[in-house]
Length: 391
Image 1: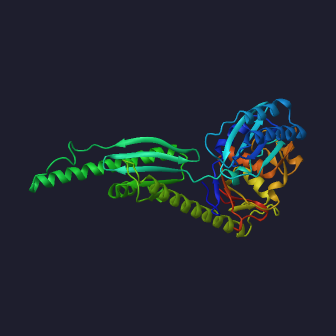
Image 2 (image 1 turned 180 degrees about the vertical axis):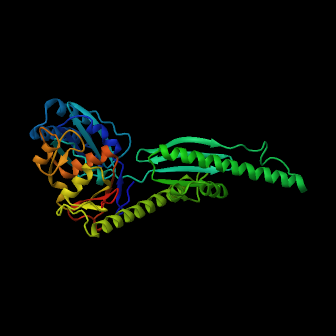
Image 3 (image 1 turned 45 degrees about the horizontal axis):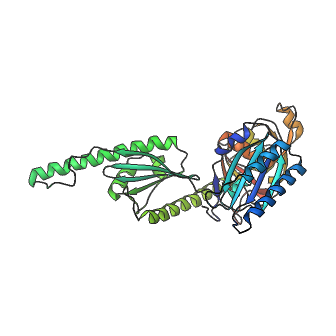
């Protein structure tokens, strides 16, 4: 799923295996949305085209064979808009579906894997931790780019026969109700504690609470403030599941879209404020960094020194195509070849700025945010919001 015009927050941690081994890299982006009667013939033509393109770019025979072999053996398990393959040293390292079609076929043979297009093509929803809450406990699920994954079940102590007994009047009824209240409070405590534990272990951006209204509010009230701010209550859904799942998913989609929109606005507000501050790092005056970096020199410096909290990628502008120089380590990136050598790189390799900075972001666990078309972002297409302010 995508949020058109909302900005894509990309979890780039899955790219780390690409940077654990040397290149050069064969990369293939292709459309897979068309299903026609001549599909086998089209696949054969596509395989031949990819092989010819990679060979013409200088790829070694073993890597070409690995890519074509993977394409020839493809088995489509669910429809996708596109597909991206990354191969080096005679082996396909990553083969992933795309939510957005990249066009027909695009190939490259480069020192770094051509990963920057994934920011616009992968189409990620914000990941979220979903808790179905009732008086007996909660079921937790993680919703991310890979789908829905059960996490755990929690349960609280409940009085024996709850809901299946007649309650005596007067003080006996009061005692029963008081015992029920204590049990419900205990369950809410347990669910909140479990959510806090799971939240620290899961790469989620949003917490969604559904189920019994009283219990989900009780759980939310027990969460610490930082987590409570990430929590959203939705009306549909229960631990029992059933036909309301589609309505629940619509509410979840809405909550994730609102989160994406709000996050985009927050990050861009921080970027614009940092960029407009006197002495802001623009890459031209050599001043100390403030809250934002803009342009190739400034963003390269911010990423190399691990100052960037968010890397901003535009969909237009020449900075992404700017040539930089890289070494084998993710923080070995420089605007000039001599600067790369000064970083200890004996043989610097040229690379596109967007690919080099995506590598740095993946290794440093830096957030990557795609700025939608028509939204004011970094001039030239590259920017960063910094983790701290300089003096």
